Structures are given as structure tokens and as C-alpha cells.
Length: 293
Image: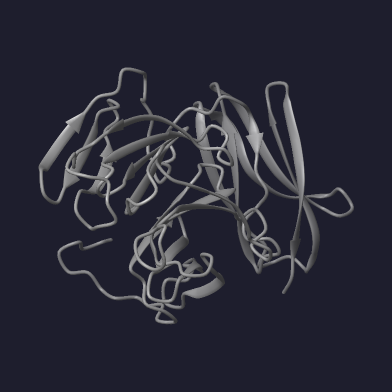
């Protein structure tokens, strides 16, 4: 924003009411609480937002907020209203044309408490679960979340109510701050390492080299490519046409360990199949993408 004291409206998305949203680069993951849906919105053109897809967060749902695993393959959705039980739901969003339900999660031994917010930090999900307080889950396998820690900010009960923990956030130090509507503000520390960074900032260090499928795919005319470096290294990322001719060099430099995202603009190219290839040290990988104009 060039002038943060005088913001200028560039566009809007008014297809459904948006209660809360997660913005990652140029994609919006919106919780449509009144409609029981989640919408994924392309915000590349800020003056003309467009719907990528919308899906029902299972019957009786009332989605409040969303959070992404860093590889953007799983979307976690909290249900604040609707039909009990109010569950944390996990969706496979690798294929935007066929989003599939994976599983749900509730605190260990608690079935009535209402889930409100989730924030994801690397392999951990930090959850504000109203009367059940703060809940921490290990999502190193996001399809099988495991509760690893909790702190009850609202010890009175674990009933189905909107009393209790409302919001959570984790500092880079690993300390968790939590707000409880009745009992106040808490700063918590776990007895195991939880250093990391929220997936919106993209600065945590991955364990392995990886090249992700571009998004969106198919695309017209631009798309984004993500890759992960567990160590500092020289990186080249190039795009080739179907005949193997190089059409673009996206990256050719030394980079620090971390996760990265680059854009590819095919406005001057014709529709068809293209390939992008990454090389970094001994790591090599390539994937296919399709441009449709």
C-alpha cells in the first residue's frame, strides 16, 4: 500500500458473506459462515476478484476461519455455528476441481466445546476452542492430527457455548498468546520446541527439497510455482515448451534455505503444455502445467 493512511478500494467479492478469510499471496480462502461454505478466490487482479471454487463444509456447517498447511495441499476449517458437534474439518485442496473431505478433529475426550480459530505454524496447529481452551495439534501428517498439548483458559466446563478461548497467536519464540472472553489474556509456553513461523509469512525452514504443482493449473495467462530448500544452495528454475525448448528462466541464483514462490506469465506464449524444472545441488524435479487462453 503506497499510502496506508489513505487506502483506496480496488475491488470486492460479494458473491457470499465473508465472515473471516485467510490471504496467501494472491489467493483468498474465505469462510462463508452463513452459507455453510468455503470459497477460494483468485485475487491476482485486485480490481476483479474471481471465484476459483466454493464448497460446502459438510451439511450443517458454519465455517468461521481457515488455515493452510504450508504446501497448500490441506485446508483446515473451523465450524463456529451450525449443527453440533462443531468440528475442525480438514480438506484436500490439491485439485481445485475436485476438493475432497479428509477428516475432522475434536479435543481429546471432549465432544461439546465449539471450535473458533486455528492458526498453523509449520507442523503445528494452534486452536482456540472456546470452553476447551487452547489446543495444540501435531499436523506433520495433516490427515491424522494428534493433540500434543493443551491449556484450559476456561476451567468452568467444556460445554457447547461461546464462553472461553477466542483467539490464538504464536510468536517466533514459540510462546503462544491466547485471549479468553471471560478469564483474560494468557501467554503460554510449551515444554517442547515450537519455533516456527505462520504459513502466511513463508519463512520456516523445510526438512526436504520439494517442487510443488503450479497454482492455478490450468492457467491463463499467469500461474505461481512454489519450491522448498532445506539448505542454502544455487537454484535454477526454468520453463520449457512441449518440444523441450527453454521459454523462460524464473530463477538462477543462490538462495537461502526456506520456501519460495515465483510467478510465471505466459501472456506472450500460445496455449499448450509446458514443463518447469528445478535444479538445486543434487536435487532435480520437473512438473507439467497447461496454459489455456
